[in-house]
Amino acid sequence: MKTFKIPYYTSTLDLHVDEANLEAEIYAKTDEYKADKSEEELVKDALEHPIGSKKLRELAAGKEKVVIVTSDHTRAVPSKLTLPILLSEIRTGNPDADITILIATGLHRATTPEEQRRMFGDAIVDNEKIVVNEAFKEDDFAFIRTLPSGADLWVNKVAVNCDLLITEGFIEPHFFAGFSGGRKSILPGICNATTVNENHSYKAISSPFSTTGVLANNPIHEDMICAARAVNVQFILNVALNGEKKVIAAFAGDLEEAHAEGVSFVRSLAQCPSVTGDIVITSNGGYPLDQNLYQSPKAVATAEACCRDGGVIIMCASCYDGMGGTHFEKLIVKGTVDEIDEYLSKIPPKETIPEQWCAQIYSRILKKHTVILVTTYLDHELVKKANMVPASSPDEALAMAYDMVGKDARVVVIPDGVAVLAVKP
Image (cartoon, rainbow, N blue to C red; front, side, top):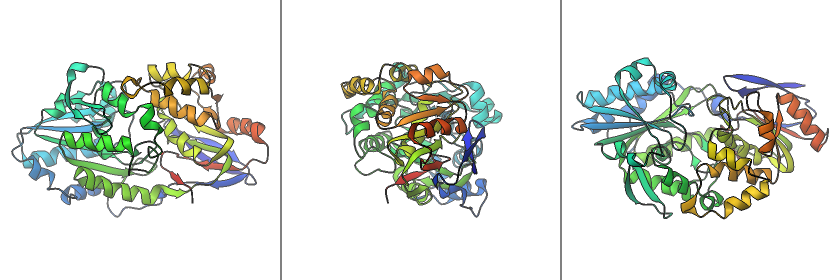
């Protein structure tokens, strides 16, 4: 019997798998990678040697209004480390700069003051100007242009009306944008609901290029790049993280060039051959990404790449913050999987419902696989209404899965499904 520690909320859950059933265990190589510098040194070195750009302190010279776009409470960006360094770098170039930190929420709820203190630290919350993007406040946004997809681009006026726009974030595989980081800080980060919805339309999500690890010809990525260039993002700082959410690499400079180098680095550690199993067990990497069901398709999509048709996916996600979106919750319990998908498929891009992409991806996966959701926070009756099977522990879920597909089932374990990019060999 082999024991696995599956990330769950701020800790782990034990999973026990008989080695006779264990087909494979898949990890990203991020945890094996050992950086030759400390986290702080990596970030400072990236700023000292920007890719395709002048140094940030040089860009800041003479700029009056400076905006730093950072991520919200659902992301593990190490802003306690990075923001003070960015602020210092800007003020080295321009001590009098008027700096605003703009929290990119996309369609998520507003980040609370308590969450800001946890993310940024008391000193930044008490002394810096912070604005939270709220996608449904129409007056907060300015129209910029039409995107390649035909969508209208509306961006937060705080970012539009500045002299220097900077973004920070982290890079990991993303199940429909290819990779996170870079341009995603703008779209969906600080766009209004109309723009985000159309970027996440049924048509866009259905593209064969809108998938993990793919940027070329990806319509979602193409709109995101166009949006970020349209508002003149002049500098980015993106990091790569290991399973403990520690910085193992940093990339700074030009929006596309620095992001491309970061993507290449992350791909080299995350990409691995898929292994087919009857049962695939994974997680969303624990806190903060497993805080609701809305975020959980990221890892489920990784498991999908390794699960045979008709097989079982076991997803461990605390969902301590519930379903994670009122629109998503209404859609995911709207009917059978086929009924939900048929309903969504008829919605034109410009009439896209907020959060419908999540129900769409779950419907795609649930058509081929049973999904058992391991959660001790989300009401199990609600899980059933969402066309999933609830369980309270990985071992309980595995026992259920054996009953469904047989005691001789081949089991694939992917402890952190968000960190892995599984591709067919």
